[in-house]
Amino acid sequence: MPIILTHGWPDSYIRYQKIIPLLTDPASYGGDTKDSFDVIVPSLPGFGFSSPFKHSGMNNYRVSELWAKLMTEKLGYSKFTAAGGDVGSGVTRYLALNHPELLMGIHITDIGIIRDLMISQDNAKLSEEELNYRKSAAEWIPNEGGYMSIQSTKPQTIAYGLSDSPVGLAAWIIEKFRGWSDCNGDLEQKFSKDELLTNIMIYWVTNTIGSSARIYYENMHSLPAIGRIDVPTGIALFPADILLPPKEWAERNLNITRFTTMPRGGHFTAMEEPELLAKEIRAFFRPYRIKNKNQ
Image (tube, rainbow, N blue to C red):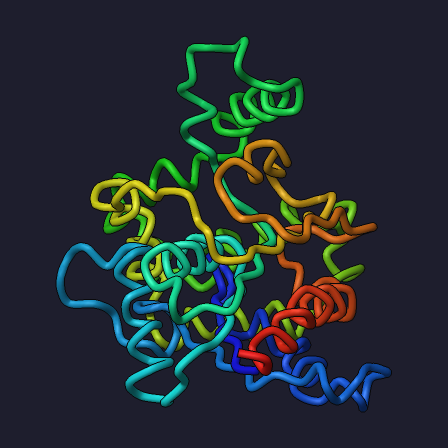
């Protein structure tokens, strides 16, 4: 079963380094060989060793179109699965929305800021969980979302400072790993120095912190509205992640067939808890292997 995994920001393809062998060779890690995947982990355009885009408009939707061509025209798959987190969650959902005939299922670990809940004026139609989400998001955005405001409005300005200072770049990235992971303020509970430095160096040696930040600008200014997704969808929520989506909202907007609250972990799930995430991905897609064989 082929699966395309899409990373986010400020991580990179290195996000999935630990999980790749757990998915390609599950039998060597206590799993079943029948649950193995062909794993494809591309870098988002403008991230790391993936060339920066030369024209405006390279948002989550446009990336999903590139992924569809990659999987079908370049790699030759007629059907496949997809998973992701952060920006990767958005790309994965647009892929399912616009190419349902290609997707056996999708798996995501977050939704991000749910704008329709933020702007809803009819509180009577919202569940208690949805109202709590809106309150949490309203607190999180001014306190933790400064990076997002800058990158979605003036990405080129921050690019000059971060491209000129390795310490500045490291601080910009590491602060997110510390704040968004389930580490209780101690980064090395979840990440080794080598992991953190490898991720930073991918941005530094390729000089792509500016082009990576620009996807926030493109998503803010040119991203089309997303409708209901009918492709079978699994969501795994890790308790220390940011802005966990309400189940009621997810069930209205996606074809949820598995919704799991994980025992631990944060935003960088595949790096923090690779075994937990791999087990969950294998469990979610298992029924669709059987269904696909019978078609």
